[in-house]
Amino acid sequence: MAATVAWAVLTLVNGQLVLIIPALVSALSAAVFLLTPVKFLRRPLGTSTALFGLTVALFQIYLATALLGTQLVSLVLYSLAAFAALVILQLALLFATLKTTAT
Image (cartoon, rainbow, N blue to C red; front, side):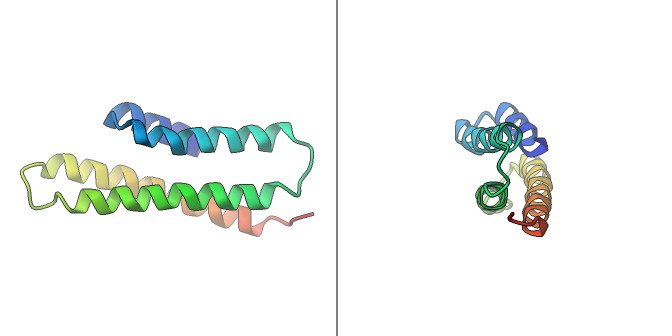
């Protein structure tokens, strides 16, 4: 749920509508986690959601580093910090889902 909020806030702050997709994916997977009583979906769904969020965050970091030599350094540093925090959050989600048992 924290990843959903983080992606939604970054979408609102940055104004990039592309970032709404990871927010929707995180929200839908959180809803499945809460609403389904079966546990066999949790590990693959959590892993795929975390990997998708991690991929998008790393790509955003890659795009921000391309602008380091320009006059937008303060914006780039803000973006790098925000997406680095999201990378840490997505890695925590990935490791937490990999530690769960798939019963």
